[in-house]
Image 1 (cartoon, one colour):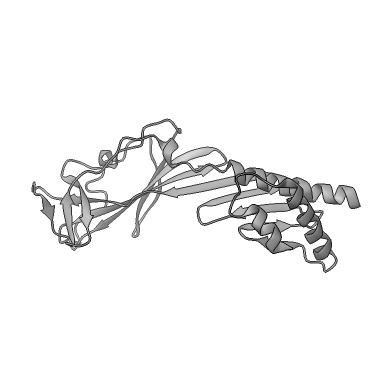
Image 2: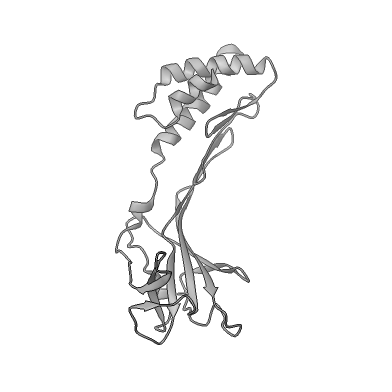
Length: 227
């Protein structure tokens, strides 16, 4: 029964077969409550069928949706490309990895409709006198989340139609954007920033939310029908 339900909801179908989802779900609830088994896993979905604690979770590596008797919650994270920035006075076509450099990771986060961009900075250097903040200029509209021996993380709230930040704004002019060439094991002097809006990087969870909501309401309907 669980495998049949899984085929109906994962991977997410173009058209949701609500009739067969309901049939399978009713069978699963009947079977499991007789054995006092209230938590059921169906692919990335977790169902709590306890009538006093009804919940539906959808969770993947990058997305979470939770619907319960008390609230609805969703969260998504979209990791973007890791970028590199070399600290140097020299203007060259390529730079050795012996130069001090920053590794910059960027995530777009959506928590219940609030959008944020998160940037994490790591400084790679053999010079103990260099500090991660030495070449950084963090704008006032960013908040610092962490600043410790593992690096610096900052964030700010964004809107979908806003142009994506060019990370070069975080550095002074002694820091150059580069591309890491794995084959040559060199940094190539190249800025690969593209002017795009954040909308491109926001996953659409409309179908997943629809499935979670339908499963949750079907669970409620079961207990209303058979109480």
